[in-house]
Each structure stands twice: as structure tokens, then as C-alpha cells.
Image (cartoon, rainbow, N blue to C red):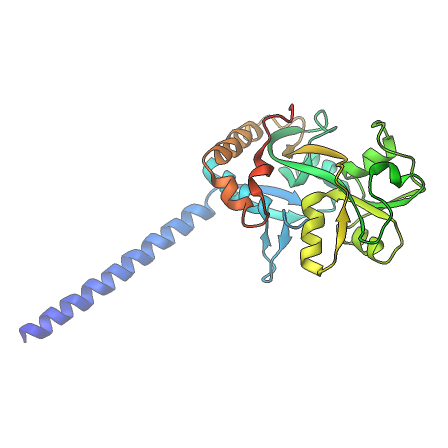
Length: 271
């Protein structure tokens, strides 16, 4: 009889432990869902933001934003946007910020910025058998870019003396299309963030050759509306810097990119 009481006591203790743990998990979940929501707008741009096999947003920017906003007391909702309408969406308040491998260069007066939190090279890529080896070889050639991206502005404005006059500049709405155009020979070259090109080659098992001379090295930031005076942007900038210093950013980036430390060398970018 005494043995049965001991067994019953152990079972009761176990049930209580499970019940209490369940309550604790429920409390944590409730606490998370009660946090104010920040709506982050981005497009599909691996490895920074893309949908995983379960259709859930993931990538460098998604993980960095989730951790940063968690530290700030917010939960984040990542929504896919039309990249060409990003400025309109953030200014209207439909989204709170833009974060999708977004170059700060040349846009400092258009938004309120958090960052830079990553350094990125904008580069040109060609097919492996191409006779293009340097930027000057692009003279008279056809090149594809994603519309409203930094490379589009570089080749349209040609304020950099290294940039030659192209035969045609083709601006496409979706990132994947520029690589399709290159692979099929519709264009001679493409221009984009280096890490995006590398990711595409991994995902689709294709080989392009990236020119050694970059178009530019730019800082990646989080863009808020120019008139956003809530203080969230400034807090985000500080939190991202803390994550860079404490090693959190490196742990996230190295899951997606090789030689990950170089992407955190933002101190000399001049912003």
C-alpha cells in the first residue's frame, strides 16, 4: 500500500510538472503575441529574404530583424511587396520599414536609415565563356538589372567614369529573370549584389563568372519613412550594432554566406 502511495505521488508530481511547464509555455506564447507588431516589407531576394519549403519567410534579413525587434520589444511580420512600390508603401504607413538587402548609397536623403549593418559588393556577372573581363568591356553590350535597384541607377546615370555606354540596359521586375536572360543569351551580363548572384548559382546549379572589379561597395540598411519620428529607426540602428558587436549577426550570416566576417566590415563605409 505504501509503495502504491509513492508511485501515485511520483505520477502526481510528473503531471504537475508537465502542467506547470504547459502553463509557462502558454504564458510565453501569450506574451509574444501581445507585443506590438512591426510590418517589414521585402521582396524575394535570397539569401536575405525568401520563403522556405514550408512557405515561411527566412534568410539573413528575416533572422536579423526578428532578433533585433525581439530585443526592442516588438514582434515582426515579414510581408512580400512589389519592390518598385517600396517607397510609396513605407510613406503611406502600409509597412513600417523596408529590409531586403537594401543599399543605402545614393538614397540617404530618401529615407530615415538604421544601419549600415552589412557591407555588400555590387558586381557584374557574365557567362563563363564570355569575352567580358572588366567593366570597360561592357561598352556596347546588353546588360540586365532588377528595376529600381542600385545597378540600374549606376548604368543609367553613369556618374562613375568607369561605367561605359551600354548597347541596351534591360530592367526587369523580378530578380530571377535577369539570370534567365543571361543564361539564355538575351543579354551579355547582369549586375546585382554579389551574394545574390552566388546564391542563385547554388540554387540552380549554374556557373557565371563574376568580374573582379566591383561596381561599388555599399552599406545595407533598414529604411523607414523620412517623417517617421517614433524613434524605432534609431533604436533599430543601435540594436543592430549591438548584435554586430556581441557576435549575434555573425552567427546568423555564417549560416548563409561563406567568409561571413567581411560582410560586417561596415565601419569604413562613410555613412
